[in-house]
Length: 501
Ligand SMILES: Cc1ncc(COP(=O)(O)O)c(C=O)c1O
Image (cartoon, rainbow, N blue to C red; front, side):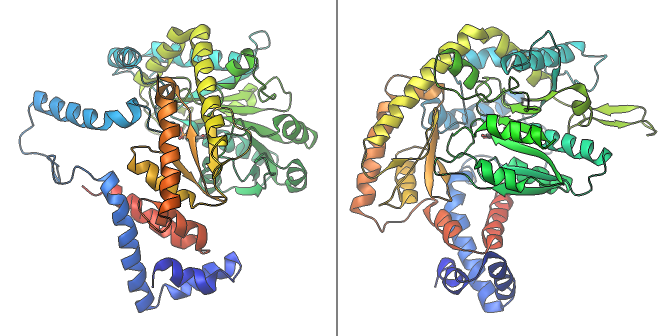
């Protein structure tokens, strides 16, 4: 009997809470525990191949070497590993992950990192250039997203990534509301909003109230209306959301939030550096930014379609008062007066230098051109998928294309695509896959290769529907086992594995 069968039989007939409770009892029975361990080991070992390929063929260190290894040798090891990992993303086999990736651009960013490798924005007096870069990154992003220099009211900070931008915005709303006596702050967000909102709720003692999406995967406005209560501090919408690339009805949601006197956050981590250009290119882009008066904060990732190196994002606020609730200050610490705008203390100024360099060097023309290429490629991929009768597109996507199947196990398609070198994103609830189209996919022949591989993968699954493989069983389990903690336990084991030498 496998884990899925063990848990999904009787447990599926229970509601989720009861299923969790039943699982917590079941897992304590030694026989069940042993079976669970065996199943977990089996599932984790299917993932092990992918994430631990160097165990037996590259030097590894369990402790510091007695004598330092020669720098040339260290650099050689770094170069070898980078070379081994380059092809999948460079040749456009990967969803998202590397958004630009041209050699010249990478070299240019590397030079910027080199030149500012010692900079730390925590010491603004030592590296005023770092704060110059960050102030300008924020200003350029704000002006792109509906802020205007005349009113100077859209302000923000640079963070380490989309998750940190979201965490900080949620903390700002929590702290602002606590001044007015809200003790149990709630975030209202569609089920499709990024999981970073769950993380924020978890870290900051907030409650996340998830609302459903409609058949086109956009937030259900009547459900949002019903979900806003006296503890709500912020409503969230995505432009677009990670899973299906669909843009929530930001105009309706933000005006609803304004009417009810609460904040509204547009998560434009994915779309912040695509949608403004798409709009200028004449594509149908619904309003999503600070031009809507109800939008009080936004997140936009420079390290995605802003084409910066990994490690930067921007969080923006309407007004300095809200931004101040993000800061941390300490006036009574023996180490001196301390102020830190974001989660980390010391930060890599080199990444802000590279981000600034990317934005300034690409400029409006460069972003417009990149966006046009991405949207054209995405449109051709979308229509290619629409022509495959076994697959269907979810929602109405622009550049993140999600698709599922009524007739096939889509996770088997994922596994067959993996065998052909592709790394697509598996989604669930409902089961689907997506491809976030980047500049890597705009190279000659990549979209064509994707569609022909997908066609072959679909044919393969049709011909051999029972053949498992890859992560299909893991997604299968996540979809059918009702006790969330079972799947979470598996995910924890996966992370444990990542930290094994
Ligand atoms: C819509 C959206 N929000 C937030 C994030 C989180 O960004 P990060 O992975 O940079 O923390 C992502 C990541 O893909 C995203 O797509």
